[in-house]
Length: 407
Image (cartoon, rainbow, N blue to C red):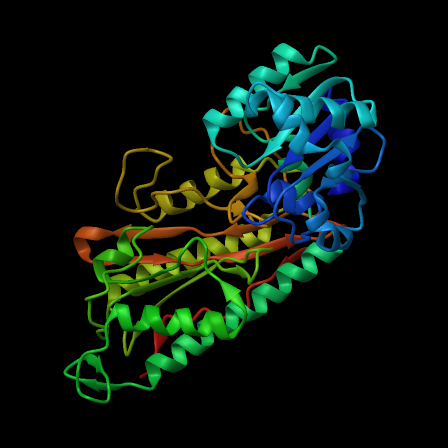
C-alpha cells in the first residue's frame, strides 16, 4: 500500500522516487496519481514527504483529480531549455536538475515508468554523469512500487470487486449466448444453419465486455479441444463449437479507460463431458479447493506451487515440479497477483530467489490446470483470492464450477 512506501524506500536505501510518463498503460504512474488521466508528467516522492506531481498546464484539470500537490512545469520554461541546450537529451537532463533542485532532492533516487529501453538507458546514464548530487538507482526484480502495489487498500479492493462482478457477468452472458443456439449433429448452429465458430463467440464476448464498460488490452482465451490444452492458445477462429469437447474460457479485462484488472477461468463442455475430461476436471477442482483451504498469511508463496505439483503427481499427472520440460499435465505456475497490471506481486514461482510470503492485502489468482494436447483436451479453473487486513480469505470469483453446460 502507499502507506508502506517510506518503509520500503528505507529498506532499499532510497532518498526519493521519480516516476515519469503517461498514466495510461503505465501502472507506476497510474498508481502514484491515483489513476488520474494525465498524458505526461513526473511524480517525485521524497522520503517522509507526500508525492508531488509536475505537469504541463494543459493537464491541470486532470492533475487536480490526483489529489496531489501539483507544480506547473511551465515555470521552468521547457521550450527555452530546449532552445538553449545542445540536444534533446541535454534538455531532459536540465529539466530533471531543476525539478530535483525545486524539491531539494539529493542522494539515491529510484526511477520508474514506461519508456523505450534505449531512450531510458541514455537518460539515466546522462543523469548519472551530469548530476553529481543524485545517485541513479535501479532495481532488477520487484521494485519499491511493485511491493507497495502488491497489497491493496479498501478502495483498490472495491474497484477490483466491481470489475469482478462485470467480468462474471460477461461469462454468464457468454453461456446464455451459447445456449441460444440449436444443436445439429453435435454442433451448435446459427439461424442460417451455419456452424457457430470460436470466432463468432469471440465477437460476442467483445460486445459483452464493451457493453459492461470493460476493455481487453491483454486479450482473452476461448478455445476448444486441442487448443484448450495449449494454455495460452486464444483459440482457432475457424473451429466449430461441438458438444463434448472441453472449452477453456480465461478472461482478464480491466475497467474501461485503464484501471484495475480481474482474471477468471472456467472450463466446461456443452451437452456432456467425456470420462477422461471429467476425471481431469475433478482433479483440478479438488486442487483449487485444497489450496484455497490452506492459503495463509506468512507462508512462502512458492510453497503453494510445490503443493500443487505434489497434489497432481499423487493423482498420476506429470508436472513441471518433476519435469520442467513437460508439455502434458500441469505445465505452468500456480498464480499471480492482480491489480493495475494483470501480472504483479505476489509471485508463486518455485525458484530460490522467490522469498515472498503472503501478506494481508494481497489479491492473487489460484489457477491450476491439466493439459493433454495429444488427447485433445485441457482443463483450467481460476479463482481470485483476497486476504483482508485481518488475514481472512475471500474468494472474489462468483461463476459456479459447472463442467457440463446443457444446450
